[in-house]
Length: 258
Image 1: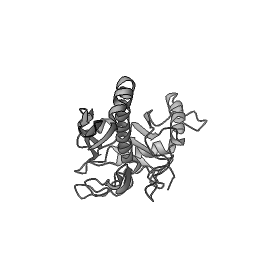
Image 2: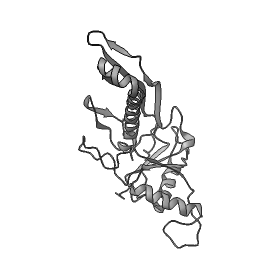
Image 3: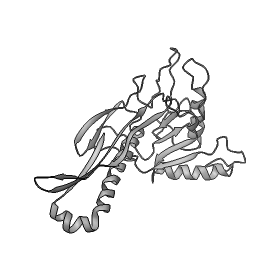
Image 4: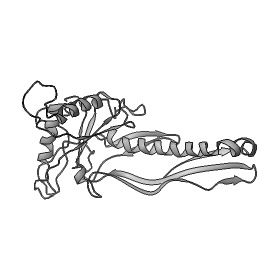
């Protein structure tokens, strides 16, 4: 549950805000709440490789646990299988190199790991990752746009080949709330300009993938008057929970070929 509050003296209310600025100030509170919510949700991807990280807000610093049901981070090469079979990975890899750079070989590696995903009973459960998520304005976004241009023309990105492209076009989401530079409140670099994430949109549901449940949207509370001082107070609040369930529909790469 998050909230924000603004307070105004009685004189300011009477001679300033009441006549001119109430709408602007209230909208400012709502915008601050929206931005904070989007930053928290983006941290889910920034911290995909971590089991916890440090979050900072006006109340101070606190630890956020990011593990799923298998006690591992959302991005891991060691996700356990419910049937006790061989662990599976959602780190983009061609079998030799992991965390592959966002480029044509990386997209082929993405198809490879998607084809290796097994169901809880060990049956094929192919993931067709068709949405890429990158930091807006990052090197990953620019390369993704270049790759998309080539794929739409059925060309292999970065080559002068007559062969057609072996991978499909994808939906690109350039999220401005992803860190892209790391978190100053943590000794671990949560994100970088080369990070990229992939999602199989068709597999997302209440049991699969990242989750967001909203009990109360960003709401403007009733005006409150402090009788002793006549101060006028306005506040907004929201109530929601977020995390992830089964991480099979999402794949991740730090984009550094390590």
